[in-house]
Length: 163
Image (cartoon, rainbow, N blue to C red; front, side, top):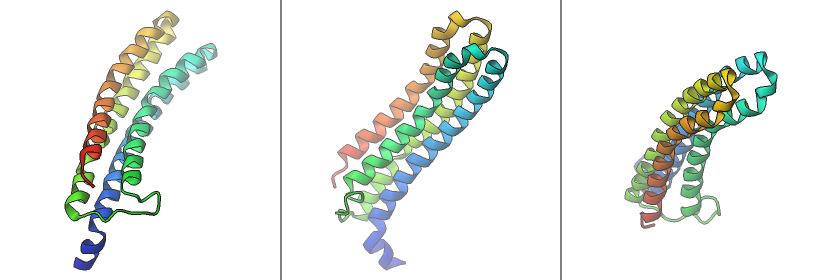
């Protein structure tokens, strides 16, 4: 075990960090899109002509998974894991990369879920009055702000870690 951490500890921690960002962002998005999709199915069942507007609102919580993927991809790219020219990362660098992924992962997990709830509420607005689509989108987009901030912090942390 000691030998593993001496040889592979840094890269293993970096990969674990990338996984954290991707998995938590993906969970947040899948739950959010699922919540919005349930509400959207009800709206479209009664008013099929509103499918386009419902689809836009349902897609919004899917972006958190993209942010998590981008942070994970950034880690894999910067460490050379994707190119086959893996850098010799120390344990300290591995831990830095691991923890750099957490702001994005946590922010995307929670904002994806809550954006799905807000999007579902927005679909109810659109079901009652189609002219409320803009307001419904703005309300859902406000939740996205925190996923973007988590993504930006993680990306900045990754860029400023000396490898």
